[in-house]
Length: 111
Image 1 (cartoon, rainbow, N blue to C red):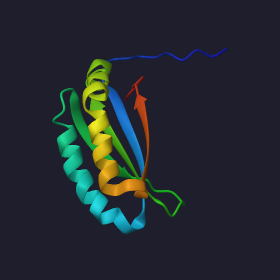
Image 2: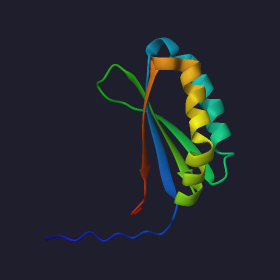
Image 3: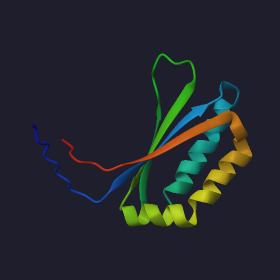
Image 4: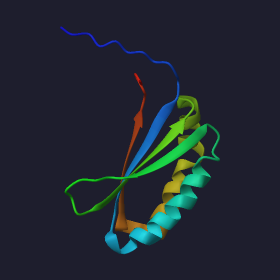
């Protein structure tokens, strides 16, 4: 059996939000996203934000947003006190024209 050495150097996490956006709201959504990301990095513990255009063969416009968060404690505080309102805001503005999937990533190694 092979063993993987995990070298955790930090408690920082990546909170990743994957989005599928209907083409007819793409520009409006990107404008909103820029403001939203700036707002998110003002949340205690959120250190940075990066958005990526997913390049694949699927014609659906996909965006991957990654927020670097200093700790699981900070992320859980966000979930308990702010996430519901943030998600509600997006639903009210864009409705079913956006689909989201979220995940939490813990770095195990970097070079």
